[in-house]
Length: 530
Image: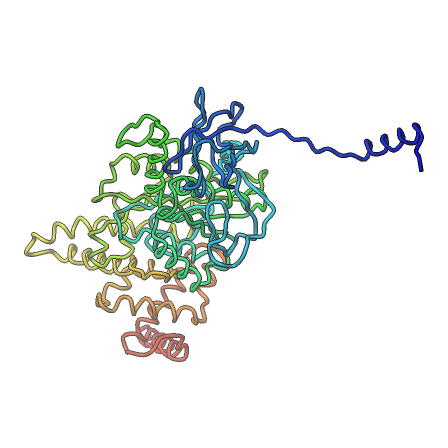
């Protein structure tokens, strides 16, 4: 069958109309040189700073240096099979990381690739790696406590939601333990935690993850890992990636978050390595000139948002490792000046058995009492004073042969206060129990207890108060205060408990004996007045 000209025309016309051409243009460059996780690329003239680029082998890179005739790219992944002359393609989007509920309970890389063997991460949302910090108008003052469950910190160096509190100290002085306890203490609360491990051994990170899992803390925690074995670019972006994951909950879900960066010293070393390889001029200690900016733009993203913005918060706990206690080195002083206070852990105290080894002298919270409930504020004022006096007298008493009664009393009180503030790992305390124990220590109710029995005394006291008919612990929880009425009930309960304790009875919830002692005390009082 022959087709005439008009039929041929109509068939061609129909085919042309149905023909769908997907034309796309991609700006492609060429690798000039590559090595140590760094590539110089020619031909990406319109490339943006922090833009993602894609290499032939599927690895992504981050445009770092925008130079006159080339782009310096840090490679986020395998770089051993990238060679000179291979093509590099622009993606036209700045580096973003997957975020969302699907990350909670997972252990992931900074690019949200799973490391826990639980399959792919299920999430559809993305947040930019370098998010913009909220402005002054979008913030409100830090005034809501973030309880760490650590007596020495919640009482003397309180942390508020939206605060940046530096944990600083030498290697093996208990820095990570404080951060882990703070995460564990959020169990059952409304705070989502992100733990960022930078430059640590994979075995160390595995231990941390197992500790969190055993204490039920992985249910509200995301662990971001760039271990010592990972390339420097991943170690550098890990804290930013962790912050982006937390910001999703703060901005989109209007929730409270806690970010731990463990530690920023190693991130600074990774950034120094990248910068030197990219021929950026070295400054003090060979760090690049913008290392301060690298840390400040990370930590400025921590905030307590205004009510108009949803009232969410991001609390930052950066960790810095010092060398031989030198807090005046470059990176420590940088981060101290960016944060709202620091918790300094002293090796000498740690080895002396005072754990957490908090040096009260140079540890400070610039938010202070605003981040404490009224009850804690009331009992903690005397605590810091007592400890300061004790430390001074302790040094003086070493050289004094004969001490007067007042000095001996102050030394005894100080010793017992130090003992009360000692705390084991993963043994966090609810704030109301901290309040009553600190009240008992600073009020002189433990002055007649032998030092080696203090820990047992405080444990049994709390057990007794949990079952006491006065319900003093619940009253502190409800009112968040320690008014005269509650204090009178607490004093009565503590005195009753001490009588049971002196008689050697088991005071843990032994209410019958408590009532008997109270009745005896009342009878004695009646007899005396008669």
